[in-house]
Image 1 (cartoon, one colour):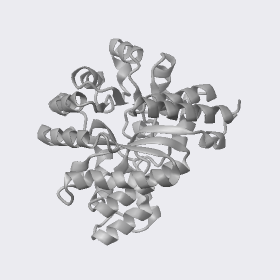
Image 2: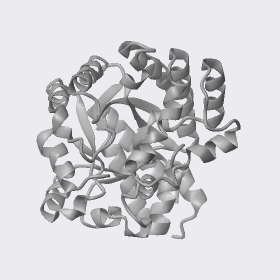
Image 3: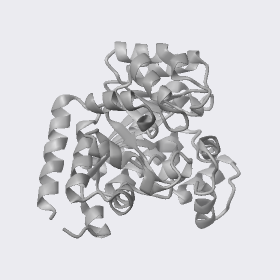
Length: 341
């Protein structure tokens, strides 16, 4: 089968690794900035999109600095709800049937209480889901650079909303020099109270970071995992255990986790039987969509239609959903994939 971009766009998809504060529409950013008296680095949607594009950053830390601009306009309940709602609408337009959006509620305090900073985006996700049919859930992220007491509070808050749309706890932020083990108590609380956990690892630091995420923090999925291949024993263990890898091709290129997409290890992990998923990470900073990431996987890594279908189903099977809901999602997406030839 000859794959076209139009066909890939039409496929049903799921996304597991995307930052809510990395997916604002430039027009929305400008409107919210005017409402809140915030200065942004550009005054038109086109210029702002260019200013947010991460293709010139030198590393993860510089990439993360771009987030200060969208976060600066996400300091009211109204803004948070609107952004989450528009995010789901944009996902639906890209034929995403299920999405887990992540963000750090502590970045929206003290302007909002922690409760408000969680309830507002949950309301937006639910409104978007009701309107579009795209299932949307939330992941609460702590940051490695925060004191452990803050991530402990975030884990407790995530558990409190575990029956209302929050499906997991995550640890993100600057990786090198900020070990996940510093925040093990937050993971223990989340895991101990039945909430799933994922963790950014192997993006800016080596495979030891992945080992820490899996063996010390008990993460059930790995965000990025790009450098896993650097430890063959750990690679074999992670892939054999079927621990899902939340791969983000464009983002990994921009943060210099890889120097060339053709050399990205996602192809290797898939060939070795690993549970590879494809994600955007940040639609604004990486100027991408889920469909665009699948097109990159086809064009740069040589994934064919059967392999792309497998990745789509990997994402559905790796969703942090109750088993009955997950089974319905898998059945729906499988049926749609079979109908599109």
